[in-house]
Image 1: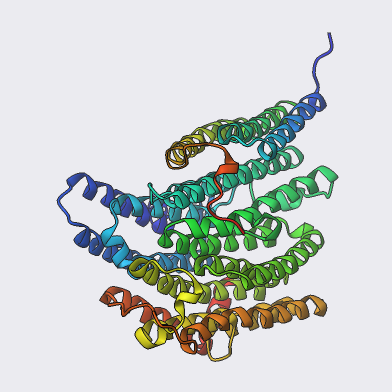
Image 2 (image 1 turned 90 degrees about the vertical axis):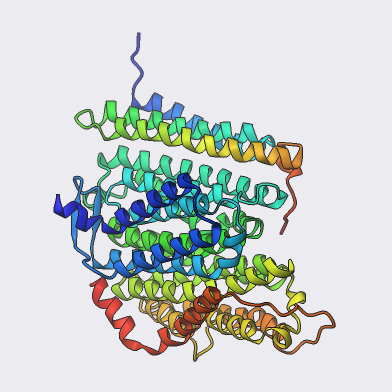
Length: 104
Length: 466
C-alpha cells in the first residue's frame, strides 16, 4: 500500500482551507460561518504537522504551534459564541442578512 | 532573573494593574467614581514609569526582544490609553462594569506590547490574538444595543478569519524555512513561489488588522456600533500598534522581499487613500466619518512605510504620536456630545460654537491636524511621511498622496464649517465638561500644537530608531 506523502497532505489541507473560505463567504448562518473558520484553523494544523513530519523532523516548532492554535481557537470560539448568543437575543435571529443595522 | 524584571517591565506593569483591578472588583468596596480615579492614577503611574529604566535585550530564547525604540512605542500606546481613561471620564462613571472594561482593554494592550516585542512567529500569533479577542468583547459592551452586538459580531468574525489567513501564511512560511524565529528567517528567504504566497498571506492578515482597503469592510461598522471609548481605542491604539509591528516586520524580517512588498504597499496605499476619502465625503454620522478618515490616514502611513529607510520608521512613529493626540481629541468631542445629547449626525453639529466654544476649538484643532494644515502637528507628520516616501523616487505616487491630502481637506473643513459658520435653531445645548476631561483635552490640544513645533522630538525619535 502506498504511504501518503507530503504533497497529498498539503493538497488536503489546501482544499480544507479553501472549503473554509468558501463556507465563510457563502453561508448566512453565523454558527456555520464560525465552523468554516474552524476548518481554516484545522487546515493550518494539518499543514504544520505535515511539514514537521516530512521536512523538519528534527524540530518541534510545528507541533507546539498546533497545540497553541487549538487552544486559541477554543478561546476565540468561546468569545464568538458568547457574542452570537447576545446577538440572537437582540435580533431574534442568527442570520447575517438580518443584522443590517449599519450599512455603507 | 533581574534581567527578566527589567526587560519585561512594561508588560509586568500592565499585568500588575490588571490584577489590582481584579482584586478591587472582588472587594466591591469602591464606588465607580473612586475606582475610576484609582484606574487613572495607576495608568498615569504606568505612563510615567515607561520613561524610566528601559533596557535592551532578549528573553526566552529570542521569543521576546526589546530595545529603546520598542519602549518608546509602548509608552506612546500607554499615553493613549491614559488619555482615553481621562477623556471619557463621565461615560466611565456611568459604566456598569468599569473594572471589567479596563481589564479587557489592558489585556488587549498587553497583547500589543508582546506584539511589538515578539521575536518569533508563535509569539507573534499569540499576541495578535490577545490584542484582538478582548477588543471584540469590548465592542459588545452595550449588551442590549443592536448596533453594539452587530459590531462585535463583525469584529470577531473578521478577526477570526484574518487570523486564519495569517496562520496559513505562517504554516507555509514554516514549511519553506523550517524556523519560526524572526532573526533566522531573512537568511532563509529564497524567493520560491510557495514562500511568496506565504508572504502574501501574512501581508493580507496585516492588511485586515490595519484596515487597508480591500480588507477594510469591517472597520466602519465596528467603529459606528461600538461604544465610543472602544472605537477610539480601536482606531488609535490598535491601529498604532499594528502599524509599528507591520513596519518592523517588513523592514527586518522581509527585507529580502523588499521589491515585492514595495509595489504591494504602493498600490494598496493609493487604493486606501482614495477609497477612504471618497467614502468619508458622503458620511453623515460623525463616528462613521472618523472611521473612513482613519482609513485614509492608514493610506498615508503606508506612504511612509514604502520608503524602507530609518526615516520611514521615524516618520511613522512620529505620525502615530500626533495621530493619537488628534484622533483622540476628535473622538473625545464626538463621544461627549453623543453621551450627553445622543446626537451623532454632522448636521447636529451646526452652531456648536455658540453653545460650546471650548469643545468647538478642540474639535477644529484636531480636524485641522488630521487634515494636515500647517501650524498643527498633523502637517509635519504628513510632511515627514511624504518626504520619506519620496526618497524612493516614485513621484507619481507621492503626487497622488498629495492630491488626496487636498481632497481630505474638503470633508474635514465641512465639519469645521458646520461647527463655526452654519446656523441652527436647535444647536447642541451647553455641556458641562468634567475637569479630568478638560485636562485631557488641553493635553491633546497642547500635543497637537507643540509636537510639530518641537523639532528635537523628531530627532530624538530618529536617534532611538538608529
